[in-house]
Every structure is written in structure tokens, then in C-alpha cells.
Image (cartoon, rainbow, N blue to C red; front, side, top):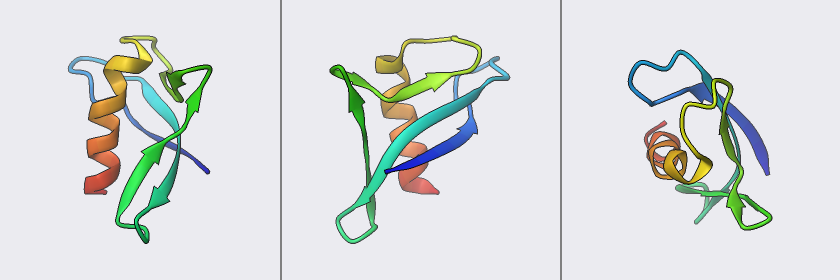
Length: 64
């Protein structure tokens, strides 16, 4: 697992998102870790829930 920090994709938020994820499929895709059933994704500003951040951050990791 890797801990990655990226700018928050939420419009108008200047926070930093921290996500715990691991590369899968030979490093061509990412899987976000889950802690107590919740995605391991959080914004430093608390702008949206981890569930709402999961898909945008996964897309950003895949593109990056």
C-alpha cells in the first residue's frame, strides 16, 4: 500500500486529499484501501465524504 497526496478534485476546495492505495493489474490500475468498510480517502478540508471522493481520486490515480 502507498499513501498518496494529491490536490482535492472538488471545485473550490484548496485541500489536499490523502489516499491509501495499491497498484494492481501489473501496475496499470489502482485499488483504494478500505478501513472499516470506508474508502481510505480524506480531504484535509473535509469538503466531502470519503465515499464521494473515492471515484474522482481513483480516476486521478488511473490518469496519473
